[in-house]
Image (cartoon, rainbow, N blue to C red; front, side, top):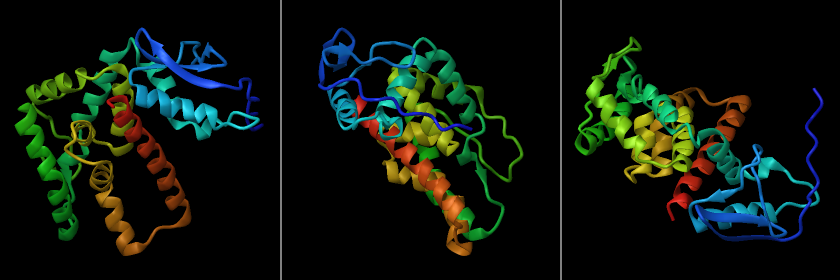
Length: 237
């Protein structure tokens, strides 16, 4: 497969200015655009400044892999805007089989770690949203109460399409809509969310080590996760 050719930088000056729906990123005075040709306008000035900095940092060629915030804004504008209800449904589908509800049968130490990290989040979800989730040992499917899923759906529906794009990413990266929601509400920091989502993997690494290929894959996931968390924070600044 022929590698993608990076486009040449076609602009000199990057700035931001207020727009009807937020803050626009301008390249030589013209609106930057998404792959679908939408104007690159984001809700918060802090996020716009960070995205503008990515564009300004490009050299002779534009390297999309060095522009993670721009990438996420593109996804929100081109892929989530107008599809908010469907994206919420996709996130809530994860809640229906959420990582936090399936516990290790053995070894005992791993089960204790899961309980220590996951039970407080489940208790918070119940207290905050009135959503109670069943748990069990093993991987057999649990049918969660529809009322609980409805409450979680309502919680996610409160977010705009920029934030939903990130919450969808965090959910798919971790396998847990409930952890993503706890992070969005400030109940968990990014590091706490990552640790809770990877307790099984970390347990295995602590006992058997980690090969180079797995370590590289994890680093890629962590970079994507951190970019999403930063985007979420900046979008609310």
